[in-house]
Image 1 (spheres, one colour):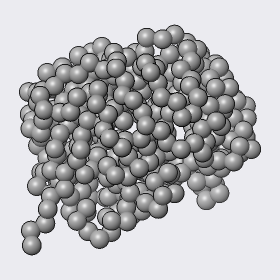
Image 2: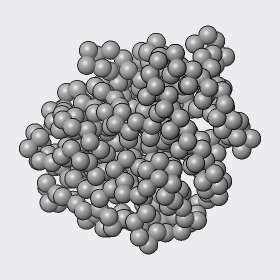
Image 3: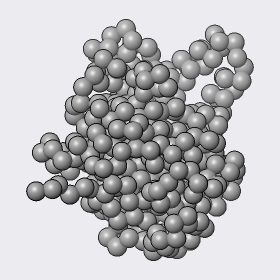
Image 4: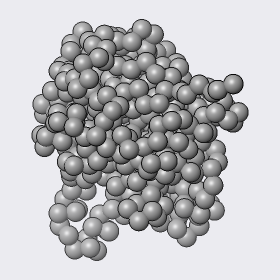
Length: 394
């Protein structure tokens, strides 16, 4: 009997990635899709100012490309959810715009999806490589206080057995295997799992949103799997490098949110203490040794934003820690541009799609957002916004 070919919707969140987005779309068009059919490519543009999301129709497709244009930067998690709502394929692939698929990437994924092992897997990731094919970070351990302590103090280098590094080393990723989490640059999962988990938690503007989702999937009985044959060229940090001190602020805010959501509160507060004392001192000492005043000024700016956002992070996270998911009304701030003219409307939420309510964001203005520093968008758990209220990472 001939096996059916599963279909996938590819969601790409873009923010000022220049030529990388077009290269990413072209790589999808060149990939062998005989074992995994790409139904549509959904590009969610978070108010880019560089024209990177323009004229994608001539980027070498099919598959059909639909561009969803936001009037402000809504963040990576919210934009991923927005893109996912527009499709209906069996699988979802969240792909960074600074990645390029190899011709056999989707072939390897399709072959794996037809195995019995795939039925026990919730999330699948590929092997990230640089332009020379050398291994890059592909998967990580779930964050713990010990991991953050080891990284902040350098103990992870001296005593890796006691203080394991957050990211798996190349020697640990020489073959396909179950892992805690795969990185969000190539993040494949079944739509039914994504919707049952409520999608990405939009309280994460940037960083740790895929870690949060992977942990929730694991607790639901479906883990993550690193697929070694699925090669992906990943440039990395094309968008986030443009954020300056905002990048550090978003990272600290997101990991603190993760801690308060998933750790005992006492341990989460220990992370806050570590962040504001030992880690801050270590970062400033490193900046001073390098003799670059701009670096320590950026560090201080990032920590000021973190300290300003901290009360809202701990308060809102505590209030929704075990809250049930709620239906979410799509945002009206989206102006859509279609290249295929066939995708579902941006104002029609997919029935049954449920996601987390979004608490207050970090104090620093979101990159490309209209609001100013310290602007709060907090709403109580379980509420549904009546107006747009939220403006990654590549």
